[in-house]
Image 1: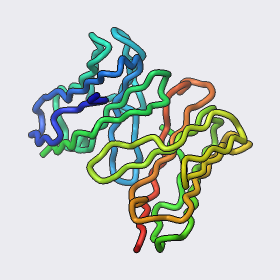
Image 2: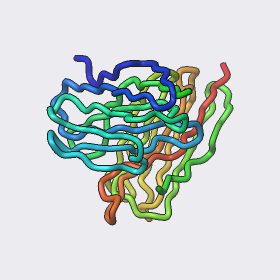
Image 3: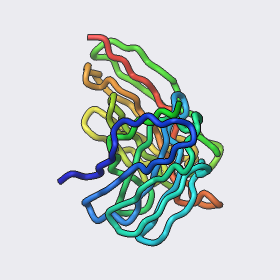
Image 4: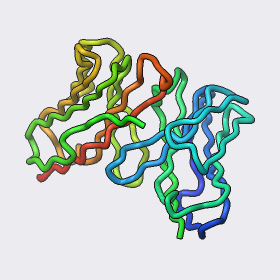
Length: 112
Length: 114
């Protein structure tokens, strides 16, 4: 039972490059979300999804896109990376709403 | 966006001591959660609280949902070295445009000296 799997674990991008952070869960959870974690800021919600085909913005959505074509996968796209997007990104999933019980191990992203 | 006010920001304690931390907000929450994060890992749920006044334990950990629904407390008794990590509170609001979304505190960094 893998739980929530995020790839890659580490990534370095140049300003302006694009990339997709992958998130997959094998628990048949309906609710999935993406957070970023910055020192002293806790976790801030970027985007979330309450089911396949349904996504919505969180607290800090600018510069990020998401889609949810299947229950299992919830990728996060950076279209044009900026240094301000240097952060640790966490994907999470849960059965019932945003009471997330399961987080992935995170992706540490550096934009230079 | 609003964040929860979590205190203290950090704690340095001796093994065997008890630990207390808390979160406060100006908004009412209908769910309070406490997570622990270890280096290089994602947060792991410790305790979930769903009713005002609720007191819940998980081993040496005890958490309470404040009566006003604007605060929560986490206590760790008889700390051990493996309690080291960052502890986060998180709340889910009762209404408004942020209904259902989780808001996190800034975290409490706990260091336990053997």
